[in-house]
Amino acid sequence: MLNINKFNYPFTLKQKSFLENFFKFAPPYIQTVLMLRSYKKGSRLVAAGDSCAHVYILLKGRLEAVEEHVANIPYHFTEIRALDIVGDYEFFTEKQPRLVTLTMLEDSLCLVIPAAEYMTWLRSDSHALFLRSRMIITQLVAQAQFQRQNLFCGQPHPHAGLSERTGDTGCK
Image (tube, rainbow, N blue to C red):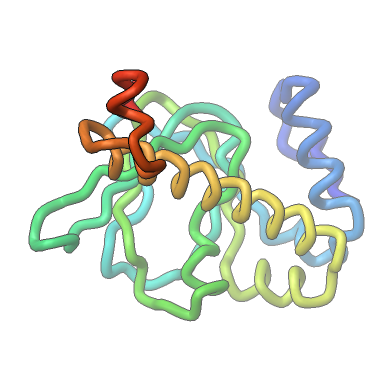
């Protein structure tokens, strides 16, 4: 289990709860490789094309995710808020180097974990892997719903005749 007191930081109850649950069965070596880092608004956490050397647990702040090469233009596809984990998606999808650029939208705080140690740990900790998988699936579902909403925005409702009867465009 993670001893968060080693960081000498006044974590909120929500942060403590998340960290204690996620690291509940983490092996002792994880404690030794974790780093607490602050980032200023506008700083780049990772850039598309970078090696995947670290995984970040966003404890405070917000990030903007931009895929740099969608139709040859940057595509701003999501905002990431604390408490979340970034930097491990490429390992789950086996797509390296990094696919997106993450930039701080405000001053932020992260726990930084070397990716090799993180992935070794997750492979042996079903509890942490389950929690992380649930987080990723939740994000993907939310992104898919948002994309479907935008896909049908301004177009006739996909159910035959509904928009003619109700005037519903599918947009809110």
